[in-house]
Amino acid sequence: MATRGASSVIAATPESPPASRAAGIAWRLATVVDVVTETPRARTLLLDVPGWPGHRAGQHVDVRLTAADGYQAERSYSIASAPEDPRIALTVLRLDDGEVSPYLNDVLRSGDRLELRGPIGGYFVWTVALGGPLLLVAGGSGVVPLMAMLRHRAAMPARHAVPARLLYSARRWEDVFYREELARLAEGDETLEVAFTLTDAVPPGWTGFGRRIDRMMLAEVAWPPAEQPHVFVCGPTPMVEAVAATLVELGHDPARVKTERFGPTGGS
Amino acid sequence: MNGEALRLDGNAAGGMLSEIFVPDVTAARATCANCGAMREMGALLVYASGMGMVIRCPSCDAVVLRIARPRKQLWLDLTGVKLVVIP
Image (spheres, rainbow over the protein chains, first blue to last red):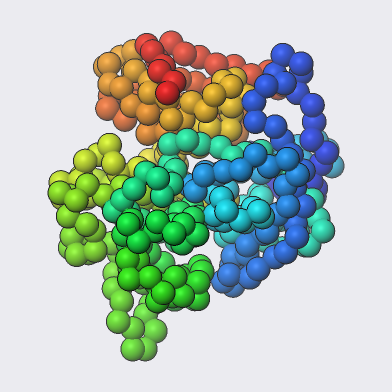
């Protein structure tokens, strides 16, 4: 696939499919209402999506960019916001060789429009009604759909009946998304525990883990298999597969270990 | 880049599949025609390219479903799936 510069990519008016394919999830024009810088390489786009039917935590949207010559590029982005939030939040990590993420990160501003369809996916989803305990394991930008689950949980009065743990692996502390919000959520909630591991460098005085997620770490952080946690693992493909395989080795039911692989680089 | 690092979940095919199936099928259970394993479509393995997606069985690696978008058409190959049960 040819790589196009971000400047050649524009958001287009949704194209009508042939009448025979009018069904399905509609492409909609979203408007960027705010942009939040999360890390030096990631931004959250807050979107107003007219006609949005609502979503469940863990679902994603497809974003479609159309160049002036008609060339289209589509990518999937997990929804970071809780279903209770009227605005749809997408946190996008900028990949230098990406076709889509540089445009979403560098070019889009408040008031701009963006073509997307969703919500998509009924597999990697969690609602408070599904119960717990809840174990979330994130690698890099894989934290995004898991954050939607934690935000949904935080919005529900019944959250204390559903204890939750997040194990979040990132390269460095400055790469961690939602740092303040995660600290705030964990501080005010005895039934939520958040553990970090940093794989490249740790800041002075660091008390968290400082290595890739391994068997010993999972045995320490995860609920015992006998408690039958709902497990959601999201991140780069090799990390997700290693974590899921280790959890199954530790005795977790494979049917309760749900995965969302982001590919080699964590989405683009 | 090896193919294994490019592997995604069936969930990633949800958008394209929604162009064909009205209900969400990522939560539907599909039975592999090759080995008979039954999995939620979201738990199948997806190999995506610019043209489309090949969806494989995590138990036996057989192709369960192929979906492609050549030009303006939409192609669906279901020879690898014996049964789809939509909840």
